[in-house]
Image 1 (cartoon, rainbow, N blue to C red):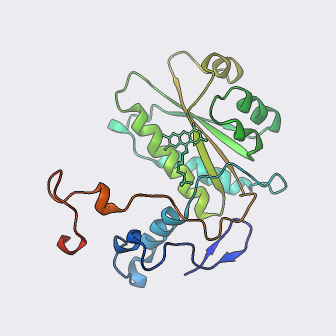
Image 2: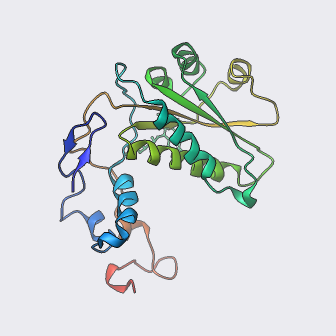
Length: 212
Ligand SMILES: Cc1cc2nc3c(=O)[nH]c(=O)nc-3n(C[C@H](O)[C@H](O)[C@H](O)COP(=O)(O)O)c2cc1C
């Protein structure tokens, strides 16, 4: 199995080693019949959130469209589709986005960004935003485009600069671009499933051998 680094370079394994506990919880070996499922898993397993983007390499419009379409296709609570997505691709506006952020100044170096607005009257609006963002990030990374989200905004400035109406909340912004550096060999810093997962009820240690 091999992966790309977003610049056309084929990487060898960047998944955890055979001894890594993450691997114990992988899907069982797959047949060609279900290999698209594995593709989704591999994309998730290899994706890292990136702050440094390659300023010389633009993301093709087809990929941007696909990323936005992935957001559109995401399911929302009661299928309410209350969300709105603002594509920001003008470098001037990306710099403005960075100025308007308290935790995502790196977005100024992204190739494009998407601001996710949601209806705060809906209790599940944050979940909906998170799901749409994850689908956009996974879609981007499956084409070699890296990304990172942030949630710290100067709200007043955001509303003014991006004409955001009062009834919608600025929930998440995501910056996208080809990664500036290869991410070969970098590992995800994640807890093993047997530390965070339980079997049938809270407190009962999740043991892979008991999964039917
Ligand atoms: C709900 C949420 C909020 C986040 N907010 C920020 C943020 O404000 N600024 C930022 O740079 N990264 C933010 N991140 C990115 C996380 O720091 C990142 O997903 C985490 O460190 C794992 O990164 P990795 O997948 O590269 O290991 C946020 C992620 C999530 C899921």
